[in-house]
Image (cartoon, rainbow, N blue to C red; front, side, top):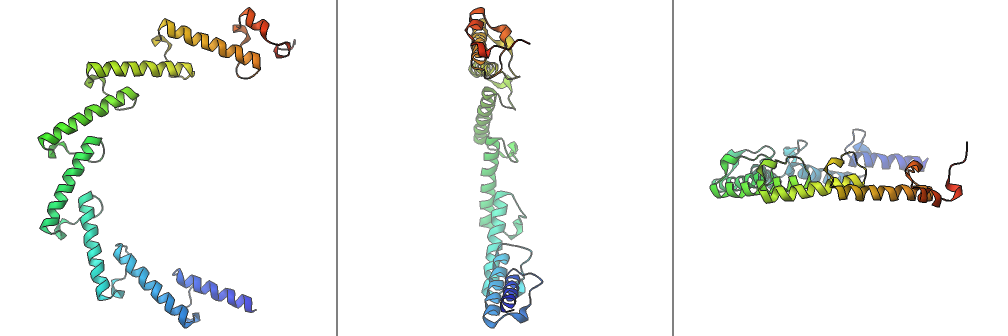
Length: 237
């Protein structure tokens, strides 16, 4: 019975610490009740400083309320700089408003250069426009060379177009070697086509010889067929 009672008491303490409705404060010892009150107060302070809806301002001390106000002000300043959350510019000081304008301009330049976020070209200075144009050109050239989306071949310089063509050709050779559906045999040179045919002939011969992988005996040369051990040859039906 003592073990059952102790177990029930421990569950109640745990329920109280976790804020569960099943908590019965009347069953807590004085030290447990005090520890719980301290923990609840600290949790409320933390929730208030983090701007959580569960914050109960009425339970804050004067200094804690001031601390919460400072935290809320800093959070609003950060939201305004990052253009996220509920920015309220009316709560900014003139100095902070200036910092926000600088931060937003820098963020816009970064978004435009990287092709992400909410880029507004109309807010760029002439020098920033030049930097963004160069970054956009470089990004397009990289997309084209790597075979990625958002490639505009018409914006490539002759040198970049040549580099892209070489990269596309090499990718096609690799895709053909690996038997991928994207392989375009019509774009292979005669020597490349022969190299791939020779490689496939060797692969097929090796598969037939070792008994591993796809083997097409009809494509074996007479000397290759003769070299396959008898046990690897199909049994007569």
